[in-house]
Length: 475
Ligand SMILES: *Cc1c(COP(=O)(O)O)cnc(C)c1O
Image (cartoon, protein in one colour):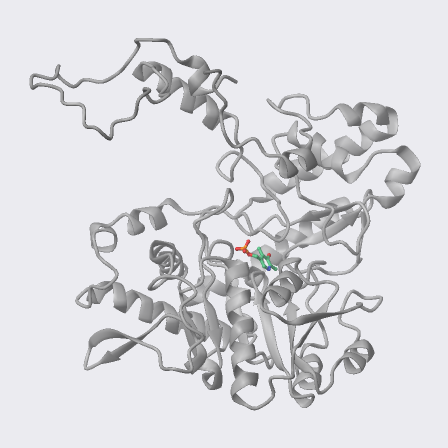
């Protein structure tokens, strides 16, 4: 596909401004050479962007089972609410924006109720940013309690990749512990890992294998008894929301991904929202402003000197919170657990349709997602997880998450979400089974997939290491 610059034709334009009828003055600061701007008609521009839009794939195009990303359908009413002038035509320092402050306050209450925490901040811009914020709370706690030597965070190997990254970014040393055979935290390994230098534990639950840790309370007890705090990576809350609360499981702080479980669009870099919640003993360390209500009047104030300080301006990505709040109001108290139940049901249904054909990494009931391992298939036929993921594109399905988690070889991580119908899941299963049949008949053909996409197999490493971010003109 051509870029706008390549489509440009000298002299073509689409301006409808009348000719200039005053003298043109060229200030001394004016650039010597004209800017390289593409010259196009409105038709050219419109067609260019429509062509671009057709080459992408989103939840509105088809099934998008990208594990750990919760690519659920985002109701359009959320967008309508976020576009209301009362939410968009305001300034963050406006103290009379009562409706906006009330919304944030109500959302804080709802999220506290859902997670079993006492207070929330909407400051962080996304999940990993929330992790960093939560870890900063843990760090602050140890600094203020005379235990700054506690500088190690324990991270099980089934954690999301951002967990060790955030810990190390926050200045902690990461202690990685292996899982036991059943995919849960190995309690013996955990007991061995904790000590006087333990700052805390960071747990992704359900973990990246889609398993809810059956020893969850024992895990938080072991860490607390050793003097550490417990952080819950709540990006996978879709599996448990309205049913089980991390606060009741013994966790001290958590981040949520509003741009996953709470139905606001994501992908392509944002905007997101990663609110962080904590128990009251950590609340003074939270960043951003605290929202209060007195006699029905809402206000916000800076937090005190114990706060870790802002991690972002004001209330974070406020309009993302508006979308998530709209979603919660639409669901109601009964709808929230219904989402989790259907997310788990859909994942188990699809897994059931596939498990006689493909190897499941950890057999048994899963939560919101499951992981296939194509290790044996690759040994037998040479067809990799990448080949199958690419082949799915020809069936109008977005590839599942590939080669993650790292402790599963040739992994495909599938998360259907609750917003898919039985028919879609049946069609997806049929596609997987059809691909398997092709593998048996003609494995070589799988290396050529996808056939119907504008770009098939880009050199991803090269693209990441040497990205071409600027257009180079000849002159
Ligand atoms: C997506 C995800 C994150 C990171 O969230 P971002 O918004 O992408 O930074 C962290 N943990 C888990 C389990 C996730 O699925």
